[in-house]
Image (cartoon, rainbow, N blue to C red; front, side, top):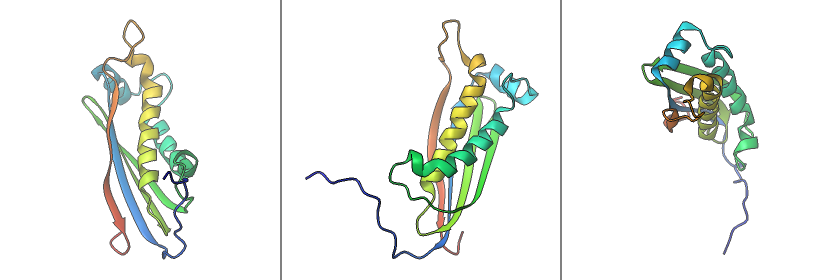
Length: 150
């Protein structure tokens, strides 16, 4: 029997503080990483653009993840660690709601990394216009807290 998709009823659940932290990595050419560090990316600062993309992605998660609840977001904290071979994006999302914010955190990380790729793609392409070294990987939830421990 095939079930019709539905949003889970969370009416009976109490509002509690909920936190989720997700992270992911974009592998880049060393030359591209150096451009980021020197502020020499033509489209602008990839990390600032990625931070705004992360916040916007959190706000739009119910439009992207079909059965996610539209919940009040109280905080979004994107952070970036520029490493020798790419950029680690980490986003913390906080709410006081009936359901968690894991999907919001994951969506934020994915959007942040996609925006970094978009901003630096000019420097990542090879002679044939391909991306032989660029990849997004390891997107995952690294921490989830519900209730007083948040």
